[in-house]
Length: 370
Image (cartoon, rainbow, N blue to C red):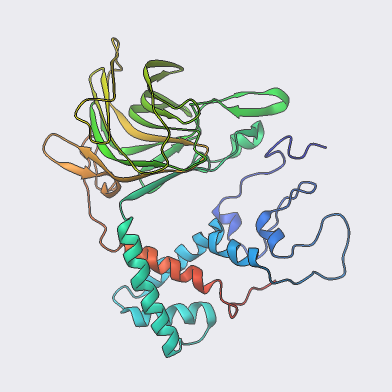
């Protein structure tokens, strides 16, 4: 009889092979409907009906513009368009998009709109090209069986290839419900960077719902949990803490820090057992500490986020003879301890094309097969 009191119970996880079918069956628990289907006139579960209602309301357009499902489909379509004829000009690309979605050629005014939209969106994406977004994607309480079935990347969405997600530390167990341990929730590690000492700088921004976030250094995973050091931003107590994780958590130093929802300049440095943090370009460290028994060996850089999305911009890894933008580090070409960066000149254009594909999914001419 449990509904929302046991979040996740009854659901399984469907892989890509199960989701790529003409007929999709969705589990329904009592009155807990699938939001996407509910917006599009899904029939009620309390009784039988002769026919489905048909509505056209604003939430449908908002869902199509912001849905993760639609975004993934738009991204896949954009990828197929660019790989099928990579050398084609924008006019040909837009016409191919109309053929794929509407089964007709684009009119001259539609070509003009598409060209202007691509130009405008490409400029918008170029301005945020080096941003990374770390967004948790699970509630604070999950039924234990469902938690164990979820892939690690479903706890915190990795921002790009080369980041490996982990569910973090969960406890409790009353009535089979697991709760995230405060401050030890989901995190991601960049596996292409593996070294002992770190010097990292950039800008960081927290969403208004963020409860805590962290920058992990010399970090490794012990199962689903993290081991290493963390520069920990606690938005609930308005503190900056320097932490050590090894099963349990030890706070090495802390200092009050007012919350800010704007961009904040940050530089962190870990050398041996000494961990220091600079804020807003100040010459003196805002907080520093030395661990008398530091972790030996190497580890990764990582990010933890809980409660809302954490964004970084132009996050840089400073090495002895060079500085790399972390978002440009190529995991396929990097070897352990020797990260290799590679510029992505077409990234903004690809993202703009994905946006245009999303727009095409929202026009009235696009046919949805019931």
